[in-house]
Amino acid sequence: MKTRKAACAAVLIALTATLAACSSDSGSSADPAACKAAMTKQYTDSIAKGTAAPTGNRPAACNGVDDKTVQRYGSEILAKELPKAVESAVESAVPSSTDPDITPACRKWIEGELTDSSDSINATAGLKACPGMDNDQLNAAIQTVTDEMLHSATATP
Image 1 (spheres, helix red, strand yellow):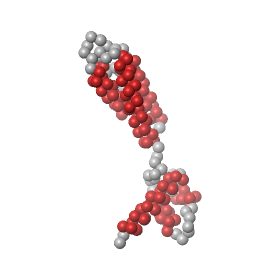
Image 2 (cartoon, rainbow, N blue to C red):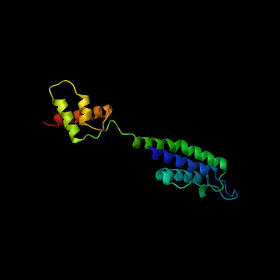
Image 3 (cartoon, rainbow, N blue to C red):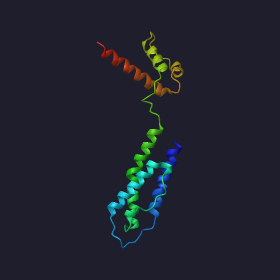
Image 4 (tube, rainbow, N blue to C red):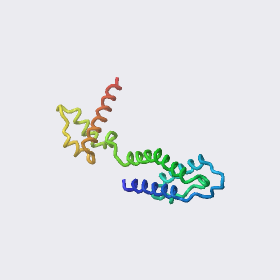
């Protein structure tokens, strides 16, 4: 997670450097669309490279585009792209409690609990049989195995 935060920070620094760069020769022919496209590419490349991303500079395609426009493009790019990067970072950093990694020993324990004569499941024993899982993950694993057992029972003639 710290790497993801560092990557986001590096990208923001790179983009800030791009926005703060001096505008170049105003006598050249400006292409605002090419400028925005180059800034977007620079941002997405920086996200992909994370902390290894080079310091951002004003893209050559932005020569002749005034600073205010470049700053507006930077804000628009951040507003559009940053939520995607944050969502991706969070998704990859947070384990999914709905998709547990069920070991064979854990699966065997769950199946035993589901098919024994009792009318309950001993969660304390389950946490021991399924090490590394918390209550939510254990519940998700039990549901997954239950669904699989029901599906295999209905699929068999």
